[in-house]
Image (tube, rainbow, N blue to C red; front, side):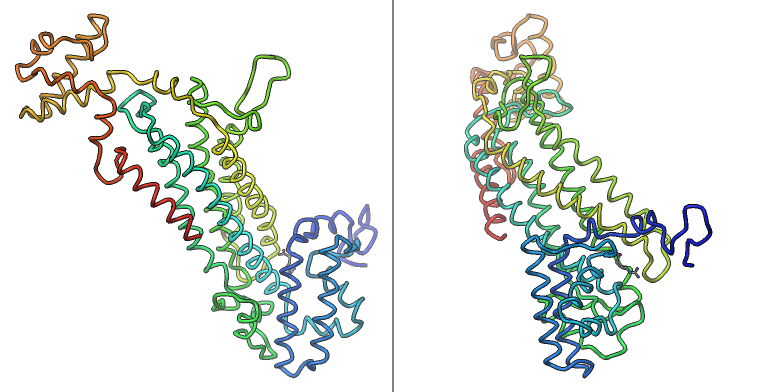
Length: 457
Ligand code: ARG
């Protein structure tokens, strides 16, 4: 008999392929701790309903403690019939405490149970990610601090544009991560709500006190509607989006460092580079390329899971089991990327001479235009005059800083002896002293802000 009794290879009551297809234990077992914590809270809440006695509740909790100890010791033995972490734990609990184990699930469904477990597991991991982000930012701050005195080209369109402090450039990659910290702080409370007591879809018929469960589990709130609670996976989407955004930022950082590595302006530590199996001279920035590449699959997991959710009817449907693999991969990838990015930042060396050599006087053409502005010439004119100076230098085969006063004067009468002071990278940078600019004072103010973010974690 059974669902697949129609003959052919469907000879037993359950097709073994279907069993494998349906099971989630291979990946959801990582939520064993949360599943047990939720069950303990539920066992305690059940005493308040009169369904089980205090002694029975204590026995259930003690049994669950034993199951947890087995998981912690790596001694939990999975049975072929364990479909998911919920059925596995209940099966084992019943082996330990006997028929009493069968009372635990009273009024509960795997639908509210899995929603609870996934939320609790994700909150735990989000908090871990937060701590790791503090380490990453700390490595970044050290790099910014070490390089705040070093001037380098700033680029637009990958073309040399204006000189900036290298530390300013480093900080430009840290503030996106500060925003990621803020966004993570925002999604955690939304995830940290308890759906337990919503039952399969309609609510709990035994009057369990959902609020006491929430307090017991230390969560921030209760889900508001039972039909919604068992199929809401917004908290998963929130994290997948968060992860995609974070990796987009990491990808941009990696690309910038790959470009700097190309001119040997920065060098990767051997710990984060690899050789070629064929070309002996090669040292490839593999760590950076992987950091750059991870954002692609991250985005795929976000879009893929949203496509899974789209069009689902209320309430629980098995499609929802598809939430976990992508979520777990995203968590693991996040941690990996933070640790590698931290290592890269902490160990890469900045070649001050190579970086200084990349500065060129043409990057001060804007400063030359600004010089004339200060002499009272309208900027639109000075922009044109400075452009003419760039062309004149090009025609003469010199750099713009080598043009004589007479040559400059031939372009505009307002040029005077003090124009030679324009050709100074340090002064150019120090003039950018508006809030968020690249002057030393403003770079140091930014470092203080990053430090405050780290301290807040
Ligand atoms: N393994 C399932 C999941 O991850 C648990 C919920 C199963 N509920 C059910 N009614 N089949 O979604």
